[in-house]
Length: 308
Image (cartoon, rainbow, N blue to C red):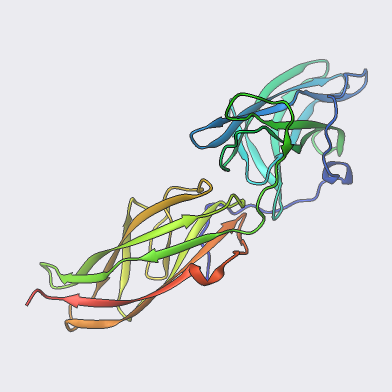
């Protein structure tokens, strides 16, 4: 099966310094002859959709060369949401979990530049604060030069009561817990003779494992097609499946999608055959293991009803 995703990004190498695990530490001081990133701690605030927060980053360039790139490693897998000013950033390490983004900047010698990175963690909010080892910011001097400085930053999740004291470790799921169920696949004769109907599909995402998309692979009787969904999918649908509309799921979120099914006009009324839908969780171009794969697939009869 070919998986449809909205991501098509290739990995490139970084230095060992950039890929070293991030640990909480104070921001690096500005030193003559160096280019450094000064960051504070990232505080993620509880919201109606998990936790959200921004991290101000100030790059100070005390070298004789321009700073061309800032590399930001997200503190939680799948949490990167871009920058406030929409600096051009692309993923350069699309790992199975945390990712590193390369943001193009132009900081001349002797100058500083400040921008803010946005993060969102789609996990249920807690009545107690949490913390994670955090991410890191690296600065690249020159257009083809290696990374010269790496600055870690701490990440805190504020409790629903507003506290940051006594934070507990945050542990993200590494396996998905997705499932789907379907209603009745009942198609009726249309004015032009072909058969069509809507099949309700319910998708549930139980945990907070990182993902970009949920994709449903379809196996349908000969001649059947999937011309669309309601709400509409972000990519075209076809007989082989569809991308679940709406993007990433909040932990515990339930979505109902109506899937349009069609059959050719020369098909006879009655049971046309059996269809199968199989749900796949996708993160950075690859599948994510599911905790209970048995509830990711369902088979259903397709009935053509002419009303007689």
